[in-house]
Image (cartoon, rainbow, N blue to C red):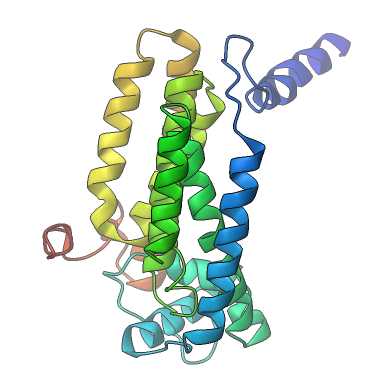
Length: 267
């Protein structure tokens, strides 16, 4: 019995938790605290100004996402277009919009994502060149791209953040050989994909690049397989829910949405 418990603890508890620790062979990447504090301060200033100046945006697509989110919790007035990606409606549920019947929680989370985006961009490029990374972060802030969508109840804000986060994860793995960021990059690529279906190209491209980088390193390749298995399970779960519970046709299991070609080549 002791041997069984020891084996269970080692295989099912210690081994999975070991993937959360920094690998021994990973390179430590240092980032300038001064640069990050500066970028964070400017980002907070710009986001605060945009929250004060920009009105709340809620139009027909936002109403569709809101009704779509209701379908996940069985709320009255639920509905939606099931060819749309479920990521943003699910994000509305997680951000508390339906729980508190208020846009404020979603706006707060949007604002936090906007503030974090320039920091992630800086940390993505810093291993290449510190001053280039700082300049890119400042240009990104001045473009106002991370901030203008904070009060819009649309998927673009979450979509943009997910792409920035995906590239950050890839940068940390590529330059630092830290396998934890394989999970990070794959997860946010999946989030971008399930926020807007057009990101399927990015998702597939990331998996292909990671495959060629990790295939000669057993531990790295194992992490990639696990990361892919996790998002595959999430995707299969959505396919099952969509086909059986939402559309009412179990034969559609294996598909993610309708009009795949139309959405993929939408211009």
